[in-house]
Length: 449
Image (cartoon, rainbow, N blue to C red; front, side):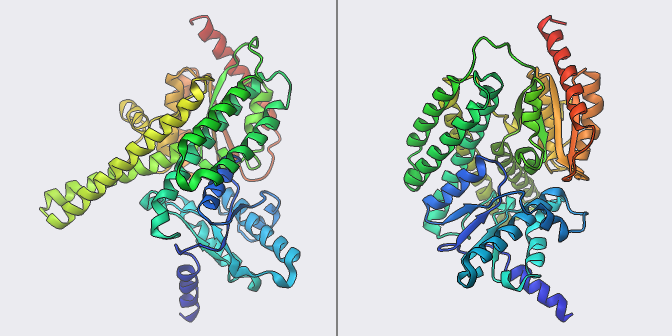
């Protein structure tokens, strides 16, 4: 009982939402653009955030897990352990673990992601020198509100900046995927976008606290114009491939073994599901849950609960409208100069599920937007769909079971790509075969068949 109480105390006092002012916030690398623009948003509000090096500590992550965890848990655990060990070696006696806070968001529901930060806490406690490294999080249950981790006067404004920075990162991703397959000089796109990322980071840190979004949009527009000049306009359009799946695996290049570049190498043009899609889905899901609570309160004639649900309903409505407004502004800065793909509306994804009787948002998890997203790709005439996920991931396994027979019937190539850190011997062959089928579909579409 005493040991159980000790663990409960550690999981409540050392994993929580507390003021991170003055602490070095350690952010796991996930999306090459998204993670770095998020860290710049924190720095704009006075939090010295850092994106940790990634995938260099994978052996450590696997050493302190059993294999039953999903792969992102092992990757992120390895990242924090490796970083802290390197910092301790670099600083020696000057290393102060209480100066660092590890940032690991969470979500509710059946996905194991909701327990990452607790499990990471238990592992960090195996190292006495890391016991004082606290773990903080933002949660999907309140749409990733930052009200508990920074002063109230900054919290709401920071969240708006962080959301716009996330959408900017989505646009930068889509610029890369639109330009790189058609670049005049191999490697030029990545080199330019590395420079563009630094420019955007600096701009966010300079103007982010004042929320001068016009300055961010202006720079984004300039980046898109310069990037578009790297394309060879005479190159024919490639088959378009849509990626769905678990958010970490599909956005973390090292974990998915640079899948997008591999598809491009074999002749495809890729669009990956965005980060913004997930944040919009979380807000939309919270609105749906609030509507359910409102209906129950109305049925039971509970005035207090009815008032509370009505207020939350209005708050989520405002939040969703604000997010879509900012998203449209951000994409407009790019699409007037380059025909990148727009993002899916969550309401449209839900309609896809309802119309086709495939799934239901009430079930939750990423399966809802992955299945809906795949069907949107179908209606937008994509030439293939790839499902990216950790080995044994429940939501993505559901996606595969539902989508395979449907896409087979529609003669649309579909590829499952599970990852656990190992390299499957037939991986390249599977991608080459998939891309051959995608080119065949493109040829049929071009001929009107």
